[in-house]
Image (cartoon, rainbow, N blue to C red; front, side, top):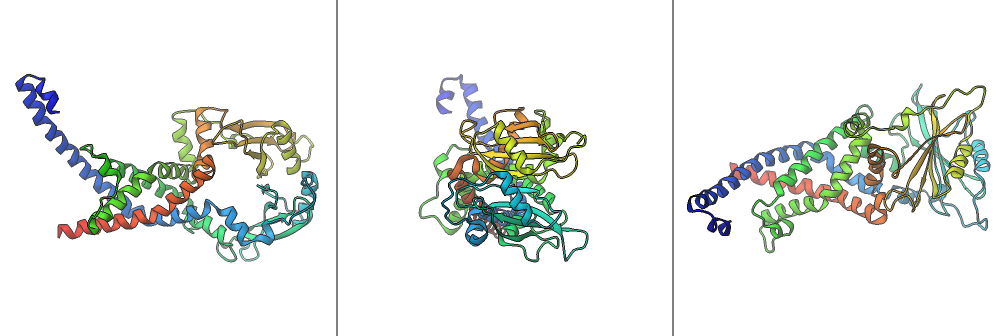
Length: 404
């Protein structure tokens, strides 16, 4: 600024030198306002962030943890059979293990050789009349043997719920049965603004970037607390923004999709329906998966959701398609439950910009978009949430005491 002033006429140079401090003062006053906003957003939503962040860290590895806790259900002993049974054979074995008249509504295919096939299904709840319990059935994919079944989501919400199911409920609904899902979505919106206002407050107006990005050595307790808060916030900010935004997309999907449609049209899967049966019976989930495999043989079967009603469709998703994308290698097909026709292909390489943007949300939220490094980053970001809340709360208390 001094060098530029030397090259200007005296009156203009004087004005420039006087204007710079005034502009800096205005920016500092504006930042003080954003600091208040950041403070109250943190106090209102910060405690929930601790629970959401910690449970999110656990759920990054939920399948590995659930397998370790339930090896008899989820693990398959070594077998001399090199290939799994045909899907049609597995479907028959699964149907024999299900209660009469029950159909699976969700299927998770094995991720590796020694993992069981998992089917989710609903049965009338013995404790809550008129409602259903969600249960899991596990099948050995090499022998067709039923390894066991368990309760997953009970209708009365708590009794008998396994640990990972409890973690999911705590993460996306704070264990609130009615209204918990949208509430967590609203909290995520508040936390998004908290992160953005924190960025404004952190931004070094005087250009002292090294000081803004590091911990001060031999600092006081108060300064060390402040430095921990700002550095934890700034280094986790990119992942935190991605995780919070994707969380909003899942907890407030209708509102989120309407915002996305302001920028790009969407071809949502719920807009596709099976045609009239015309005397045909619905095809089995095994047939639907075989159709997906035949149409797109790349990758491995990851999961399948069955039609929810007479006009619903099968959604079959495949993962680990290296040729599709380095980061989001998933492809989902919507299949008519009567004709077996492929109604839509959903992947990161097709559709509108809005469709592709939505495809990124779950991989970003879980960290799977970047493989193990992405999962570890999401895990560490969740662990940083209690640190940021505690240091922010301590900072607020310090400021309150200073004003007295």
